[in-house]
Structures are given as C-alpha cells and as structure tokens.
Length: 352
Image (cartoon, rainbow, N blue to C red):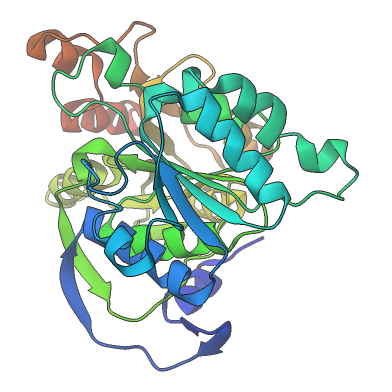
C-alpha cells in the first residue's frame, strides 16, 4: 500500500518521455480547468494514439479541451452527436483496437444515459476477454452541484461507478492534482473515470509547468493533525481545511486526508491517520446511502476498530434529488457547518 513518503516522492517526480527525473520545475498559479487541459495536452503530445471525443470539444463549453483542435487537428479532436450512449460505446471499441480515447462527457448525470456501455462493456471487457483486450480509456466529466443546476445536472455518481469493479475513479481537489491525475489517467492501461468537481473549475493554485504524474491509487495528507481525521472528497477538501483552521484556534488538531483516487482507494493512508488520531469524519457531496462516505467509514470500522475512540461520522447528502431552489439546495449539500458539527460529535465523550 502507498505511504505518505511515496506520495511526497510522486509529487516531486517529473515525467518526460516515460523517464522520471528528480529536479522539480518552477510553479505558477493556474486555474483548475486549465490544469486539467495541460495534463491532457501533455499526454497527447507524448502519444499520437490519444484522441479526444465529445460534444463541442472543438470549442469546449467547460474549457478542458479548448484549443486542442488547433494543435492536434480534427482527426484527433472530434465533435460527436448528442448521443452519449453512442460515442461512449464507440470509444470502447476504439480503445480495444489500439487508440487511447479521452471522452468529454460534460456533466456527471450523463453517465446514466450511457450506463450500459460503461457498466456492461468498459468495466467488464478486459475481465471477460481473459486479459486479451486492453481498454486505455478515460471518461472525464464535470460533476456535482454548481448552483441551481437542478436534479438532472447536479449528480455526483462516483459511488455508483466505484461499485462496478472494473473502473478506476479519480477526483482531484486542487489544480496541482488535477493536472497530474489527468496525465496519469490518459497513460493508464485501464478505463478511468475522472471527475472534476463543478465548483472547483474556476479555482486557482500552484501548478508546475512540466509534465508530471500523480499516481492513481495514492492519497495525500493535506494537513497533519493529531485529534481527528477528516477524509474529504473533491471540493470538500478545501472546506475541511477551513474548518480545521477554525478548530486549531480552539486547541483541536484536525488531520485532513484527500483520497484523490476513490477506486482503488488508498486505504493505508486513511488507516495510518486514524491509528494516530483515533477519530474519523468522512465528508462527501453525494448521497449517504451506499456512498463513498459509507464505504470509507465501514472500511475503517472493520480494519481499525481498535484504534477508534468514538464512532465514525459521515457527512453526505440526504437521500433526495438535488433541488433547483438555492435555499433547498443549500439544505441538502455538505458545507463547513456540517463538517464542523460532525467533528464536534466525534470529539464528544460518547462519540455519538
């Protein structure tokens, strides 16, 4: 399993032509969406078999494919009809015969439209062919609520895709990780689903100019602490960090762990943190039932029960569609107050 030392080493590694070089290059601040695009562009420059397909990828409404058609041409950057099941399935065939398709699915809810192709084909063909068929394939999408986008454009379907057994699922929380995980996803030999948390698209952070890889399956401790572990996913990492700063003023030391990859999950980094703190809060902007928060909490309860000083706490959505109404949407979503309250519960005497 991965360790924090391995994570730190990975973050310093420059990938150039497949060779690791130790000297880190200068960083500058960049937008999350631009960082994703840079990771994709680096992979396309390295490998001519990487192709991009999706709706409006030539002008990229969301921004992650903007400018690619000018550099790589219409053969490698192709617009598709508004038929998700069709182009999602076509890219499975393309991957099986030697290309590396990257599919811009635009909105996470659109996975439902193409679910047969994703669940019955992409997730299973390598297994059903006895390893004879490789599927180096990336589906990337903006997911989660972005402000009154309503029920059909606010889904975070990552828990459902984690359950399929044949997909890798990643969700970065900052521009640095966004670039490195995109580069890693395109180079991976297996199908990868890459979620871009919708509210992070316009955020900025330090991003190296060179090509680099964040290994899939390796989490990261964003802030060290000793009293309680908060495992946060996507945009909730930043919210957890803000809550941690508030608690620091009260003498409570909060450790914030970012899984970065939801499947395969870096269990070791979470278990090591809980062994140190004895308490766990998991925050995820998806539904509570059968969600990522539930999976992580149950894994810790099973594998680190003796380390726990209090019951693990889950912070997630109620089991309802995401409302259009701003007031009701806020009521459903995970915010800093809910994370803070969960930390307070696990710090209480009975952990209840």
